[in-house]
Length: 207
Image 1 (tube, rainbow, N blue to C red):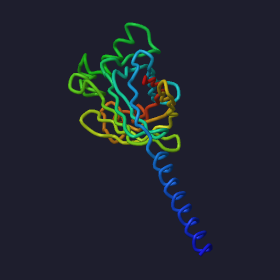
Image 2: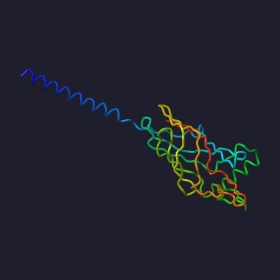
Image 3: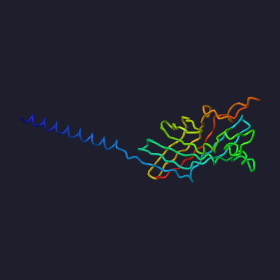
Image 4: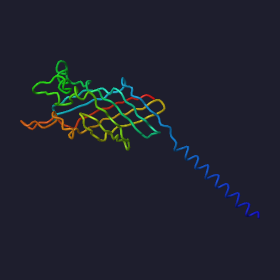
């Protein structure tokens, strides 16, 4: 009888411990989702394009709104808006800087620079960016650009804490599939602006 009672007590203890462990595991898995909003004034996006090692331009464009949601250290969603009317050159002085910006935006079309040569801002004023996942230092994102979608990976560092979050990194995106006229080979001499564009991203978000 004493042996049976001892076994019963041991069994009850094991069941209680199992329930307790299950409850603890459930509590550990339940991580609160946190949303961080873009601090546009503190954020920046730089670009650089080249036609060979000795010729190219660089500049900036503004990220105007956006947010991300995190569960612990895991990205669950995110989206940003890039205002293409803010494209500017940082390697040229005026008036050349203004001419380049107008050509890229398509706001001063002429015979050699039609509105759709590059980014056709009058028709497509913004680029939407959707963040799909972040794993192993690679941010998978989709650009909604020029009426098309482009999905690629960007090597960046995404970090967050109780105060905010940041997304920083230097990476390239290949725009070949967008078939942008200004990034096609020149039929006269086969020269080409490289469709692989370099970016430098520094996004700051507030909780």
